[in-house]
Length: 211
Figure 1 (cartoon, rainbow, N blue to C red):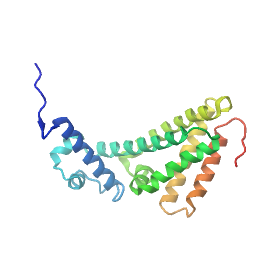
Figure 2 (cartoon, rainbow, N blue to C red):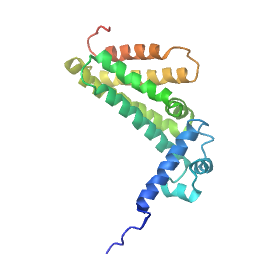
Figure 3 (cartoon, one colour):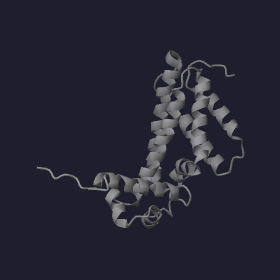
Figure 4 (cartoon, helix red, strand yellow):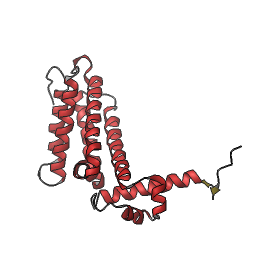
């Protein structure tokens, strides 16, 4: 016979555990996205979250596991905003690509912590580089899949769709790294226009005209 789970003020022990994990993830994002990965220590995260180290080990085995969880959460948000933009009814491939890339750029700049984690810390932090490489491959596959939905029979076929996806994903990542770090002084709209044009054209067998 299983024992009933204890609750405190109507909140179960699992709910309290989930809440503490959420606090740690938010503290991790705040530190990683403002101070950098070297300063995102277990002690600093716990202090920012207002929790003791005991509760850190309740959710994460070590600091690097937390960093990876923060990066994966950022990647999920990027994926979600892009897919929502692409799912908007109507519009040609160029318009949909523009909407998706605009939403992506707005996410990175709307919360600078997300931009720094996604584009800068993921490349600089040794514990995150392997996962960054995996995520770029995942987003390349996502581009190939979405290109099929956008272009239909005119979409590139394998392996050309994967090649185009990796070129677009890697190129956009490098571009945004340079832009967010201040190395590339260009306007937001310039980035969106060029990236959308490349996305719409490079994922299709036949060249298309843009507005």
